[in-house]
Amino acid sequence: MATPVPVLVFMGPAGTGKSTVAGMLAGRLGWDFQEGDDLHPEANVAKMASGHALNDDDRWPWLDRVAAWIDGQAAAGRPGIITCSALKRSYRDVLRRDDVTFVLLMGDPSLVLERLLRRQGHYMPPSLLTSQFDTLEMPDADEQAVRIDLDLTPQEQVQEVVDRLHLLPA
Image (tube, rainbow, N blue to C red; front, top):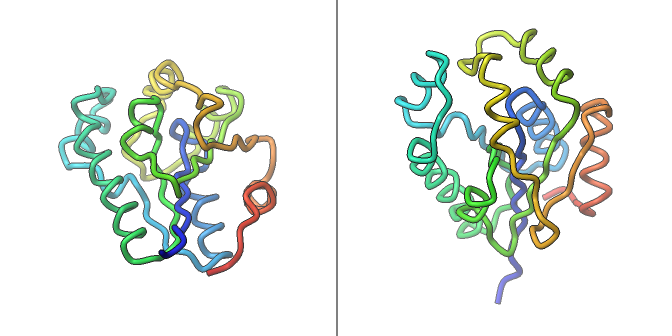
């Protein structure tokens, strides 16, 4: 029987640097990378762009697409990294597999807001950040997750993930 390959789900509110750090780590390890935002149905993007927070009904089709990507990696025997806010445990339950580890990028909400205000060309407006922090359910001890502090530089965050999860290039 083949050993399951790891898939990392970089999670947390918008503006925490999921895409940046996940992309850097994927490049360093030579692992496949998927930007989870690209899997949102068009209706979700339009809703967020108009300043409205997504509800659970909006998120389920998106989470199914993220889960399908994870399953595709496992079927292909390829390690991978995907970004997904995964704010609630019930969302993470859709994505949870034996070989999935959640990487929570987390820090002070004021720092995250500052980052969002500087961000250009993204459909997620800073006005929705409070709803994301309100929705966030921190991973429980029984979930396979690590928390990475936003006070670290992106390079330090990548190294922290590599060290804590003992990751090796593909």
